Image 1: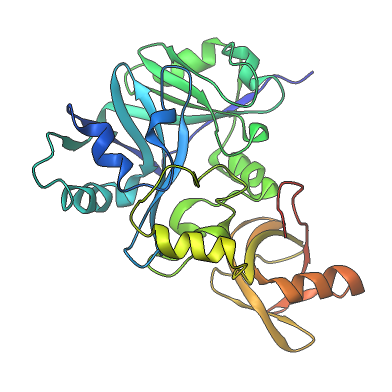
Image 2: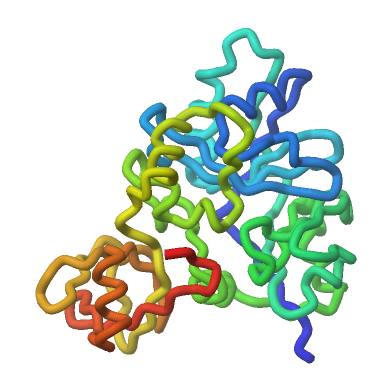
Length: 298
């Protein structure tokens, strides 16, 4: 059996949300239930516009006794600014901590057991940081938030294979997992198009959150007409935003990709037609074959 691999995720950053009102503050803003975050569990969640459109997605886990958000590094300052707009009189601070920590993904068979994380969830303090199973999907592996000083060396000493970001990206794409604003369009994407329901990113029992009305309406009225789906191809990767056609008609558009595989936002009727007829989708001069993941309910 091959050892699990680890890859440093340079595109990820860290925000710390601290203060006696931190949980109450976040609970009214995010799509998931902050009460589920404890010493042995992390969550995946999003922060939306008031109209229910995507702004940011992130993981929330306890680092010691402090809530931290594993988010996009280049957009961490924007997330901090947007959260702070709602602080009002709440006794809470939002601070970027990217300079102090690295974020890595550990993936492959046995990744969770290497940290003694059992089942499809789990989190634990580790080497001055925290490790946690990716709460979206067990097959995604484990995420590690470790001190920048010596964090990678700790993982190397565990006899993991060191992998490139591209290797992890290919793993992610094959599972159909979105990667922030690479796959979701700010102020445009609806959460359920990106699999947030199946990927444990929305709690339907928690009560109100920012953008909750549209999110609930799209679920209960069955209004989702497009979904993010992995696509395989040979040759050149189509650029993000490239229109996808089926028999000359609009079928969707490309999102992020790696050699031979990518994510595409596809119209459900086009996805069904392509699967049923075995007709390839076309993006520019590249033929695409959709591979609907087992977790996707559509």
